[in-house]
Amino acid sequence: MRCFCLGLIAALVGFRLVPADAHAAAPTFEPLRVAFWNIEWFPGKRPDPTAWEEKDHVPLVHAMIKEINADVLGMVEIRNEEAAKLAVSVIDGMAVNVCSQFLQDDGSVGMQQLAIASRLTPVSAWAEAWVPRSGVKLPRGFSFAAYPIGPDTVVLVYVVHLKSNRGEIQQNIPAREASTKQLLAHVKNMQEIYQSGYAHVATVIGGDFNTSLDDERFRRESTLRDIKNAGFTWAWEKTPADQRMTLPSQPQMDPTREAFPPTSFDHIFVQGANIVKMEALATAPLASDHRPVVADLLIPVRPTPPAAPIESSTGPQ
Image (cartoon, rainbow, N blue to C red; front, side, top):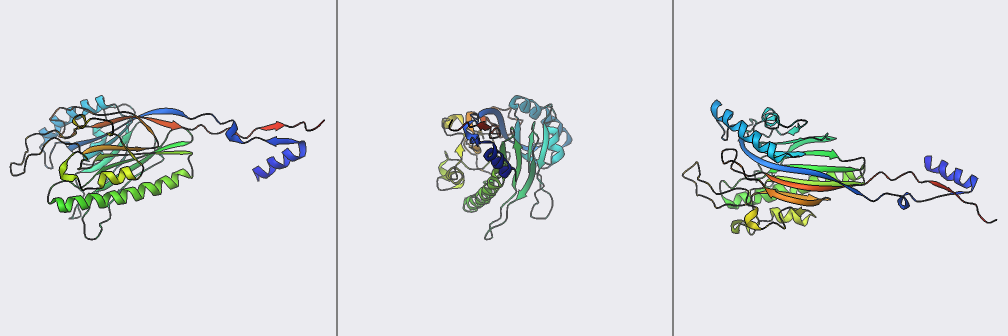
């Protein structure tokens, strides 16, 4: 009705409509700092910590989170929502937007959950468990949040913790690949939904993938390549291999397990945004066995196009 009325007015008074694109401002960019960190059974660093171990763990994590200083933080191996709130309590204005409650095989809530906290206000946030496929058990799932950046841009953020390398590699790799297929299907669905309400949709996927493009053991695994092939930029792409080690080699607590070389299991993938910088921050060994990965992004913010102006047309004299 509004378009009909404008057209009628223009016809009646001899005006013409000018396409809004002719006056639209060029996109500007908004900085966004995103980080993902496996905090190793926070708080306490193991499934059944003592009260003293929990108490000792907290200040180490707080010091690291202050250093990370992220706008959006994806946390891995968080015990529950209260633990997530405790982790970010040292950052003014940062709130936990979502924390998963994934179940274990026995039906109890697990102690390795996924949380997203931020300084931004999400328009939606939730967690979703993987659906088992063809008898393949898929632990955990993902947590998700959508953040408006300006009136016409939204950033979709996912944090994941894919199947570990405990057990047989012939089972672990298919589990990670199956989880990734479900993740990418959800990403595509969310992008289509949000594109109906926003001019620009950026997407960030991060966390502990438990696989590496640098490690010969995983050369046939498609997990990370599938995400790249879906149109995402791997934030480590331009970083030398020796500078993207996120899991330093260290003595194993379990002497029956084989020691591992340093590797890169923690990644960030970006679509619809520019990557300014990507790094793995060094942590105190007692804070976590993983290093946090941090990316500084520039998000294209497309200003709302001005209403199509009506210009006078004098016509032939």
